Length: 336
Ligand SMILES: Nc1ncnc2c1ncn2[C@@H]1O[C@H](COP(=O)(O)OP(=O)(O)O)[C@@H](O)[C@H]1O
Ligand SMILES: [Mg+2]
Image (tube, rainbow, N blue to C red; front, side, top):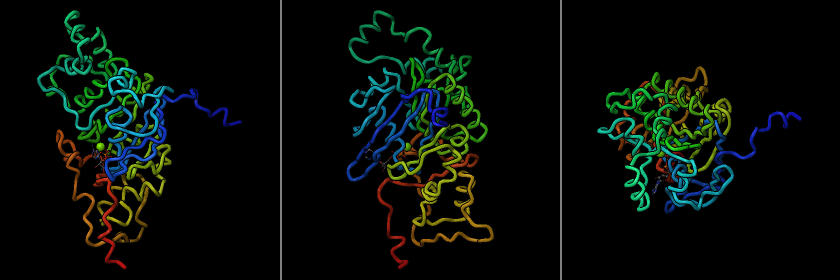
């Protein structure tokens, strides 16, 4: 009978995916992903670099070809164009998405709702090319930035700029927003404020899928989390359940495939809140000569943006590099 009491209020999730899969050549970037986000919920999607997080956002929003199903409020949208999915209430941010420096905050939001196509051109000529009254203000209200609408991005704090990026995705009746590393580059304090704003946005009924490397933000702000590794969901559950999951700890450590040093272990322990090293043991038992340290390499794609990833000393991060291909076995070959 407790099942009845704990059953979710709404049977239909805002977003659900079934066996969502994406292949890039030989790489299985997403493999059979089943994931749900309810209205008003913040769901985290975490995993090492190259695990397939951005690919998942691409697949859900229609920016890459995928197999499987994507349902918004119970309606299949996986055959729809990105534009149609956007109009249905699903929006995304782009990793390292930058603001237009020469436009005000309000103008940055307005261009996000500018229509495309001939009919739109006709409409814009007739109406004077303005987004519907109020939509920009509504989105700014959602992130608490109404009073900086006429400022330019460089007059804002980095945290505010990140929120403008989120607001841009919220313009025009967005019900589900997929945020791809929206807080990258924020220090601990800014990141916490950012998290508070995300909670406020969710409390209005908007569903949020949050990808971020800042574990303290993600564990703090998310209702539930999914962990991806090599395109597959290896764990899901509440932040507490995720922190206790050995598969998750192994994924962040890269198991025995990578050379683990004291510092890396300490970071993992701190971010996941679990003890990886046994007390009294001086050095980690995981050793594999000849394999590059995970922190020595960072994905080129990730670093091509607004340099947010370099200044990460204050936040807890787990930038293990993964290119999605099978792990290089050369490092352990000599062991036998
Ligand atoms: N457009 C693409 N073409 C080919 N391979 C891609 C493309 N996008 C991503 N990949 C590959 O898919 C895998 C997952 O990448 P991605 O989704 O960007 O991971 P994450 O966002 O978790 O860091 C990686 O191996 C990456 O190299
Ligand atoms: Mg990514």
